[in-house]
Image (tube, rainbow, N blue to C red):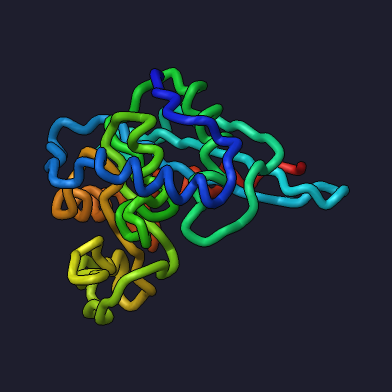
Length: 227
């Protein structure tokens, strides 16, 4: 599939923060998804492991499933030495290079990408789903497993319940209970989607487990490697 190479990855943390501030104004996060038109949903994840020399290696996986029946269509992998240190809020500069390589291998073009990570639920509103959405120019959604930023109250325990995630007076996502009595996930728009339909899509992709099926498939594929 076509992707737009927006910038060099070999930059300093200070330059990375400035780039996030610059690009955030390009994001579109009020665009409703037409779930009836969605045929392919991709899950995106990156696994990092040290090799015998102590060098971190990253493997990216993109798992494409049909929608709404969630059957596997295509899975692509890419791996490389991890190019950027672990710095909270700058995950996309650690994972972006290997993801760019993986995206270029896709033979199909997903209608929506769900990332294991954040979209607007980020200090500068530029989590991995938002950042890579500008490269993909396709709808992207962040589905994080752990809290990064924002205030919220715990949603009710039933499946489908959610509460708003707010930061500095702005709603940046929701805390969504995908399974009754199980820890929630953190949903935020990346690019070319809106929050209401993103919640609907996540729930439709999460019939049984805590995480959406495309994310589970990508996570399992990304973790199967020896650096």
